[in-house]
Image 1: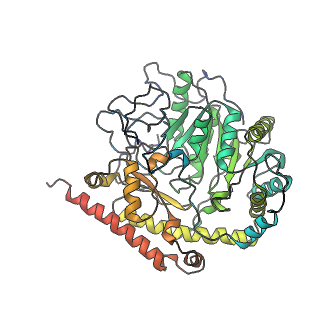
Image 2: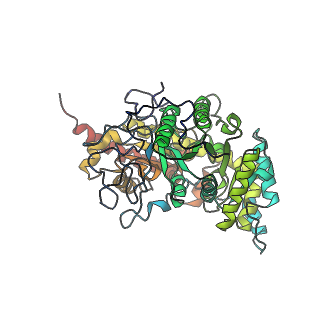
Image 3: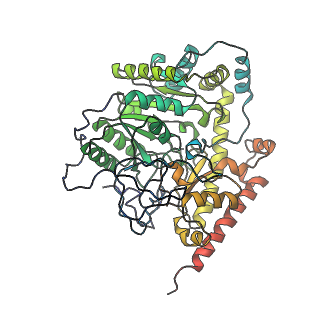
Length: 517
C-alpha cells in the first residue's frame, strides 16, 4: 500500500457531473466498515493548537472551526517525512475537516484574502494589451458564462490538447474562485481536497457553509489525494451522516509545484468516481511545465479522459496566460445530460452573483485562448525562466537541510523547514504564521505559510514564488526572457545568495543545538 505524506517517516526517501449517491451509502471500493473505527472528524483530542489570534481551539468534533487552524500534528510537506505529533495530540486520520483559519493577527489581514496566484513577474505581451484596449470602449455587457467568441476560443484551446469540447458545455467567469464557487453551489454537499491545496479553493466552500475535508497526498507529489485515504475519508464522513459530493484536484499543483504522475491521477480519479464524487480538475498550471534538463518535460495527466462523465475541467487564465489581476477562467463540463444540467446550474449561480467578465478582460482571454505565436512563445520562455530559478532555489533549500519536492511546473515551490525547528524556535518562530513573518523579513520577499494552503498552523512550511527572485525592476525582469541563463543575472544572483545565507544561518544554528554523543 502506497505511503502518504502522513505515513512517510523515512528521512532518506528521495522526493522524487453528478451528485453523489445516497449519503449513507458506503463508497464503492472503500474499505469495509468497522464499527470500532474512530469518527471521520480528524480532530484529535489533546492540547489545543494556538490560533493566529492567540485563542485556543475548542470546537466540537467533526465541524469546521471558525477562526482557528486545523487541529492536529504537522503533516510533512510534499515528499518529506512527517513531523511527530505535538505533545498531547494524537496521530492524524486520513481526512480531516478543514478549519476556517479566520482573521490573522492585526497587520496580516484576513487569511481568506490571500495569497494570490504566483505571478510571472514579467510584462504583459503587446498583443494581449491591444486586445483589451480594443474592447475597452464598449458598454455592452458580456453574457453570463461568456460570449460565443470566447467560448469558441476556449473549445479550440482544449481541442488542440486532444480533448473534445463543445461551446455549449463551457462556461467563463471572472476568475477561478467564482467559477469553483458556482460549481460547488450547483452540486451541493461536502467538498474534499488534497492537503495542501491552493489557497483559493477552501474559502469557496466556506462561503457556502459547506464542510470541507482535506486528504493527505501521496509522497511523490501534491495535487491529488492518496486514493486509499480518500476512500476511507468518504466512508467515515458518510458513516457520520455527511454528504461528500465534490473532489477538487490539480494535475499540476499549487503550492508544491509538482506534476502528479498519470498512474497516481488515474488511481485517485478511479477511487473518486467509484465513491460517487464529481471531480473538478484544476488545470491552471498545465501549460507551465518546466523544460526538463534531460528527456521530455512532464506531461500532466487528463482526468477528464479517465472519467468523462464525472470530471469538470477548470483553467484560471490568470495563472499561466493572463496577468494575475485580470480575472478570467473557463470550465469545461461533461458532454452528457448530467454535464449539461450542471453547466446550466452553474450559469444560474453566476447570474445570481453577477459574475460576468469585463469586456476588456474577456477580449484578452479570447486572444490568449486562440494561442497566437506571441502568446505561445511567451508561455514557453516564461516556463524556462521560472523552471531554472525554481531548480536553483530547490538546490539551495536541499543544501540547507530543508525538505521540498523538486518543482516541475508553475512559478513556486513548497518548503518544509521542520528539520530546522529547534533553530527557528530559538528565534521565537514556532508556527507557520511566525515563519511567514520571519522568512519574509530574512529573504525580502513574500513567503506565505503552509496554514494558508490547508496545512496545520503548527507546521513549518512556506511557499516560495520564483518571480520574487527576478527583482523589482521591470526592465531587468524582461531581460530574463532573452538571456542565455537567468541565474547569471545580478538581481537573481543576489536573491539566491540572500536565500542561501539566511537558510545556512538557520542550518548552522540547528547543528549547534544537536545533542552531542
